[in-house]
Length: 290
Image (cartoon, rainbow, N blue to C red; front, side, top):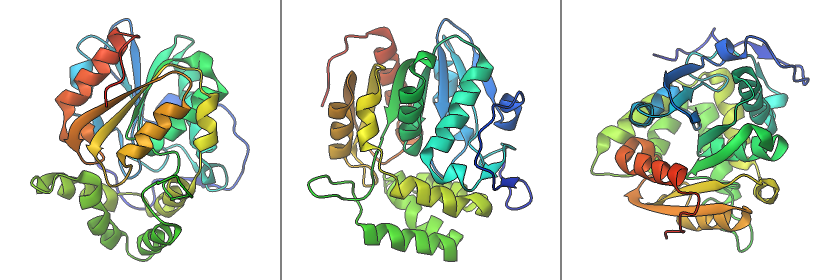
């Protein structure tokens, strides 16, 4: 599957969200495996559903795995609405539309990075859809604010957004090593840079600004769903202190810290990621591991 620049994403300027009977097609929804538990995987910024290729088949051995692409990603043909998708609530509405189209059965939502915040918003708005949440390397706010350390200053973020707008390939080359971590495994950074370069330019800058300037800290307390916060020991994009903050603010959360580095454990440490998810699904009383 390959994302190509230009000519693929329809852009809308309307602000009204209407459920679409073709939602599953528009978001390129794919199903793997089968079992009593359904897992809905939501990829992070600059990626598509293929980023789950190392963990999805393992979990599909005894669960139903459902994959989809956000607007502007992968093979999604859903229209990008600059106004609605200017807030993460618009992406949360997309997720809820997918949940509605899949049927009334509850599912476990697995969201990486910005999709962790998207899942938080969706679960706060319509908790009946979700049996559990799994948040991989979440960050409700990337910008430092007083005692809260998000990992970036406001000036850092504006500089990154300016570079993305001026030179998408240059931004990808600069950002990929930080996202991938693991400097001893350069193939991970190369893969992330390639993914970032394939982002649809009609969406990339808008989604980046929405991702990196949103503040969803107050929304965490609104989520009643039991949640696994899965954090990497060393992550320059969402530091461990952010994972601890998210876990503390959620009403019913478990924090598990993987002894790995980088922002994408499903890419760099798939077996450890799968083991943590399996443990959480099997044991609702799992203790906090830091």
